Image (cartoon, rainbow, N blue to C red; front, side):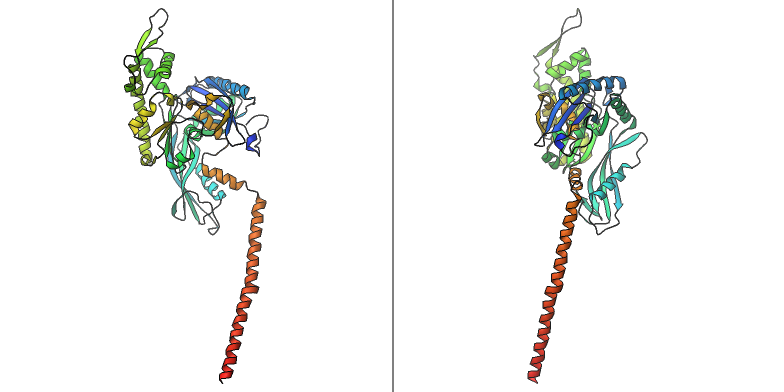
Length: 457
C-alpha cells in the first residue's frame, strides 16, 4: 500500500504491500506485489541495523525509529513507491497462546450456517477478557462443533442451532504493542496489520502439503526463537523462546575473549552446530586490538561453544513440540528458518535431538521474479511473509469465505429465481399432469368394475 493510492484495488495485481520486520539484529522493509501468475514480485528491499530492540521488544524508541526510517527510505528508493502503510511483525517473550472454547445460538436452526455466523462467533472471541496488560492479536478457529457434532473443520453450509468452536488465541503485552505503534507512527507510517512473526514466516516457507501433513516451523532470529505448529492446514500451537543467535554470539565473545563484532563474524563464517564435524587442527586467526598480537582460536572449540548453546535452545523447542501434543503427527517434520538457520550442520543437530526430518526453509514458496536474489535468504522469511499476509489470510478458510462474500448478489438472486421457477413448474406438472392422470386411471378402473358387476348380474 502507498500514500498516493491507499484505497483497495479490484485487481490484486495493482495492490502494493509493504512488510516491516522489526527484529533484534536488523529492521527490514520489503515492498511487493502479485504478478499475473499470482506469485509475489519483490520491488524493493531496505534494511538497517537494529539497536533499540532486545529479544523482540522495543526498548529504545528513538533508535528504533531511526532504523525504521532508514530501512523504509532504502526500500522506497529501490521500488519507486512512496510508502505510507505497512504490515508489522511482533515477537518476544511476552507472547502467549492458549485454547478457548466459545459458542453461539442461531435463531434459525433450519437455515444453513453462513459465513456471517462464523465471523460473528470469531468476533465474539475478540471480546474475551484477558489478564490485565495483555491484548488479543490473533483469534484462529481450530475445529467447530454443530449441535454437538464435533471435529468439523468448516461448518459453512451445515444446519444447526448451536455453533461452537475451539479457538487458538494469541495475546501480546499491551506496552509492547504500544511501543511498536509509537515507532511506526513516528516514522510517518500507519499499521495495516500486526502479525505474529512465526505465522508470517510460515506463509513464506511452508507448503500447503506440509501444513496439511503436520509440520513444526522453527524461526531462529537474533533475540528469539519462534515456533508454529500446523496440522490439517490449521495452526495448532505457537510459542516464543527468549533465546536466539545473539546469545550464541555472546557465548563466543565470552568463551574466546574477543569483541562482539569479531564473535559474530566467527559464528557466521566458521561456526558449526556440531563439534564432531569440526577438525581440531583448523585454527582461526582473529585480529588483535591495537599493539596486541592476533588471537588464535580452534575451530573445534568454536563449534563446541555453539553446539552447547544450540542444544539448550533445541531442548526448549522439543519441549514445546511435546507439550503441543502433535509430536507424533508431524509427517512434514521440522522446517528451520531465520538468520540462525544458516548455521552449518544445524539441520543434522535438529534431526539428532528431535528424531524429526528437518529441512532449511527458504522464503521462495510463493516468490516470482525479484529485483534482488538477497530476499531468498532464510533471514528474510518473516519480512516476505508479512508482505504475503497483505494478499492472503493467515487462515486458509478465511480466504475461501472472502471469495464467497465477494460473489455478486445478483447472481445469487438469479440462481434463487431459477430454482423457484423450476419448483413451480414441477409442482404444476405434478398437479395438472401426474395427479390428473392418476385420477383418470382410477375413475376408469371404477367404471370397468361396475360394468363387470352388471354383466355378472
